[in-house]
Image (cartoon, rainbow, N blue to C red):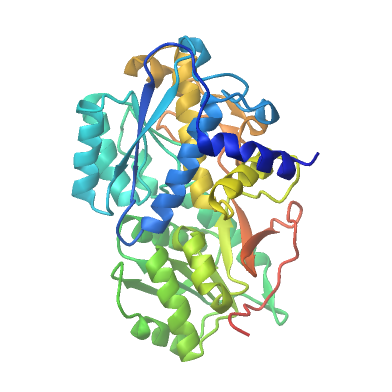
Length: 414
């Protein structure tokens, strides 16, 4: 029986509840995500993934036995106590994220925090965790400075700005459109912590690779009209345009580019809004051939990514996207550390996180592993590039690991 079929048969048990667990109070882990507001689609996709993770941990999963906590029930090193997820809606507001982090710590008494989504909100929420001495593991926020603050309680599993910029530059130095090399790069970035920090590191990395940024267009996040920005691109005619945007902005740019008849030879969307299933379903016909970064490739049958994606799709009716997968992996790393700590004491969990040494085969995402440096950054995170074909992204770079061939120039709505 194929894993997809087994996953479908297993899905009703996951959807209808969890069997009786060992005695003991649930161990609470808090998660902050935008369940309402402009980023609600991404937040609710993350919510579904985290709820799936809880059920996988609380119910033995023989097919996923290579992954920590999957073959057992709850936290085996803490008497088999079950995992409880406590979700908080940060609403896309830094002050709300801060207040919700405080509530989770002081009222819900969570033993660790995870999530955050937008880098600026992760920044404020993790500052509260640092002040209270509570481990905070982030799986999806990529602003480089989050691990440059000297924090002792903050850990991050995702690739960050320098990793992302490096693969972009390696790709662009090798790419050819109509037999011409790439010489003119444009960046379009939303102006919060995420967009600004990624744009800055791309610019620095381009300089180091002998490539220059000919044009940078910062814009107000959640803009209602981006016609002026698209006109700037149309006038400049760059070889590649790199967009750093959340979901609503990504959809708006795709629609505006179509309305103005503008297609750059190469269009790169820096994950976030471009990986959101809402973007793929809403703007997919307009954005065929867009290139995106990812660490999640569920296309290989038998892999942990393939199995997890099948379960997620059975639960939600849609594929898991990269941001959601990175969120889930961060949460799973948190839970593994709690179990290895054999305790719910924050200092014990912190020590277990510092000692983390997970191998690639123990993960549900395509990192080389998880091992934190002295700043709390995962040194084994990695990135690949994917391209939108229909309603799915397929891996196209690096070519030695790709499952599909890169198609250039960017097609758009042709």
